Image (cartoon, rainbow, N blue to C red; front, side):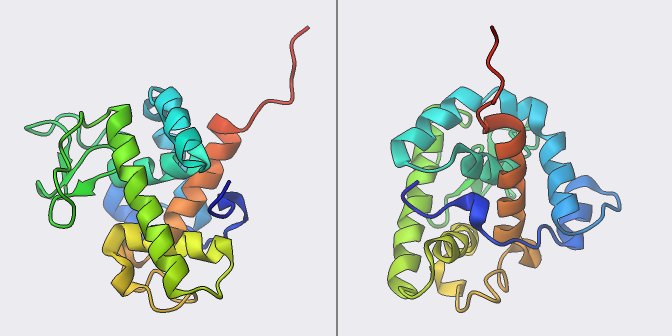
Length: 199
């Protein structure tokens, strides 16, 4: 993968605030909470596996990274499929599985909310932020830059000031860490090639 290995990115997982807000119950915070939330989205995520892999291949990123963002942003579509009109979240400000924000990006709803084109559009935004973080922090490792880009995807690169406090200004103060933990879970449970070969 050309933008760092998501599987090597350090993570502390979800904050208690995120775990409670998303599921309205007391989950453990940290990586455990991220894994629980990712697993709860698995059945919905499976519907998008093929298009996620297509987009990931096109942008040379791990498909689990895209899945991690989808899980965090829209619970794999569960939280936005019944909105009116469908696909809108964040009080009508963000659209689609990866929640492209109309306040910061032109025409977020130009593709279907659960389409491959939408995922391509949103992943292009992520790649843009990877480039911004690479320029801003050239001494960071590729994995650190990738984590910084996840924080920037949530709140813009202007809020990323240091690696140790990368989530200081993100939603729940854990966005990048939570997405990384969810992505690692999706790699192990949805995208990792099987070592079993049937006879």
